[in-house]
Image (cartoon, rainbow, N blue to C red; front, side, top):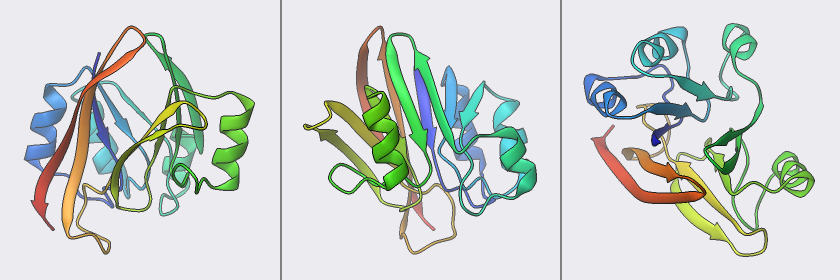
Amino acid sequence: MKILLLSDSHSYIDDRILDYAKNADEIWHCGDFGNMEVIEKLEKIKPLRGVYGNIDGTEIRKIFPEVLRFKCEQVEVLMIHIGGYPGKYTSLAKKEIEEKTPKLFISGHSHILKAMYDQKNKLLHLNPGAMGKVGWHQMRTMMRFEINGDQIENLELIELGKK
């Protein structure tokens, strides 16, 4: 399963992102979509999973949950927009991880691209940074990877250029 991992579009999407989406099996978006246009454009290309972010309004919050748990092949996935990272998880992320530890924990919000292994909880943490043009980040980023059975493989960090 080829995954394109996005976050923090803040109402921005371009043809380059959509081209990457065409090569994925699924698109996962970790919140702060910004508007329905981003969602509609992504959904036209491939199946979309996601969570709402702190800037997302009522319409988006009716479609996407705050916390999303699912299984992709044999990998348990947990996604929360504001989740922190290993050693600095938010209280919600900490609670969710303690209740049922996933193999893959994805968060957004920080606009900082990060891939870390959490030794304590034995999980991989990913934050794809921000693909949009709003925020303090300088470089627009996203990730892609594959899930093969119970393995997370071929992780790529993608720089989309300066905002």
